Length: 367
Image (cartoon, rainbow, N blue to C red):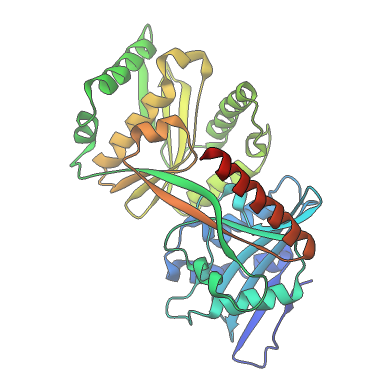
C-alpha cells in the first residue's frame, strides 16, 4: 500500500507510491515539478503513467515511485519499479523499457542530499536483490546517489550505452545534405530514383489533426516484420498492443509529436515517430516496408526528416539509444549513457560478485 516513510507533521516527508490510483492523483503536482525542472518527456507523469497503465504484464512488475514533499509541494521524484525475472527482484527505473534517458526529478534549488535521503528511506522499507539504474546522461541528477551513506551502496557499473546525435553549424537542410561525401548523396538519390519508378513519391509531416491510429498500426506492422526477420521480440509493437498509441497520445497532447511518412502513390512505405524538445528533434521509432528494401526507404525518410529539422531551425537530431549502423552513418557524435548498480540482499551480492568475476575474466581474455 502507499505510505509515508516520515510523518506529515514534519516540514519534509517522503512517500512511496505503489498503485495506479495514487499515481493518478499526483499527476498535477508531478507535472508542475517536471516543467520547473525542464526535464525530458521521459520523466513526465504522463509518460510514466502511460507506461504503467498499458504495461503488457503487471504480474512481473511492482511500481515503486518515491516522492519527497515539503507540505503539499512536491520536491523530488525517484521513479522506480521492480521487475521479477530469473528468480531475482531487479530494481530499475519505472518505464525503463520506453525511456531512452532515465533520471530522477528535483525542484531547482532543492538540497543536493535530498535524493540520497530518499534512497536511504526507500532501501530501509523495500526489499530487492539487485538495482541497475541505467541510461544516465553525464549530468543526470541521479548520479548523486553514488554518495548515499544509507541504503544499498550504488557504484558506477560497466554497462554502457550511447545516444547518437546529428548536430553541426548548418544553416539549413541543404547545407547538411551537401556536407556528405558524394557516395552518400548518390546512395540517397539512387534510393529515391528506385522508389519513384512508376509511382509518385512524397515525403510529408502528418498534420496535428490526423487520426493517428492507421499510421501507428502501420508502424507497428512494419516493425513486426523486421522483428520476425531478425529474431527479436518487442511487446511494444505487438498487434493491438495499447502502449505505443498511448505514448504517441502523450506526445500529441504535449504538442511535440512529429510523425513523418514516405508515401508511394499515397501508400505509406516508411514512417517515423519523432518528437520535439526545445530545438532538438528526437527520433523515437522508424520503420519501413521491407518490400521496398532495395530502395532503402528508411534511409531516404531519415535524410528527408533530418533536412526538415535543420530547415526548421533545429540545433540537432537525436537518434536516442541503440547501436544501429545508420546512426553511426548519420550521427555527428555520441553521448555516453552510463549506469549504476548495487545489491539489496545477500542473493544480490552473490549475483553481482559472479557478474564482476565474469567481466574480469572477459577483460583478461580480450588482452
